[in-house]
Image (cartoon, rainbow, N blue to C red; front, side, top):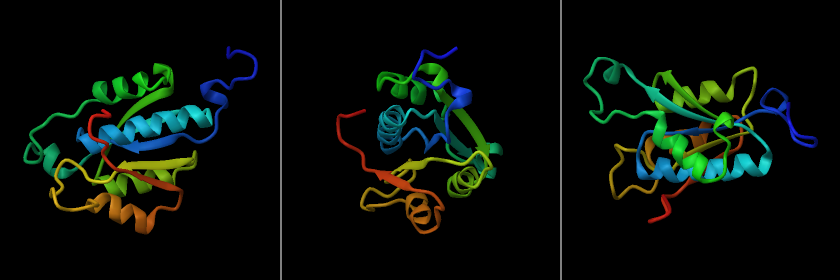
Length: 149
């Protein structure tokens, strides 16, 4: 049971959804999303998309698990019960757009400005750029703040 004046997970509205690929930009995005979810009284859903190449063992060699993302969210003040780690099939943009269109809805999508495979000179990665063009819900693109995560 929730304390008076606070909503339990089942009573809360749509979650804040953040994409996570293990990159520094994604870590900054999780921290920002966690602070925002706290301010909104919302849950935080951390999403990692796994494409066909990763499933076949031909994609990224770095294993991304939810422990680092959960640790970032908890360090920002989130209750561990309000942080959900979600691995979904597909490319990151399609996976996040699918989440945004779910019946439950999404209060806000959050991504880092560039992912793990981005070129150092680019301001925005392909996922953040495509989401900016197609997101049906509010979107925040968080730049990596050196030393913040």
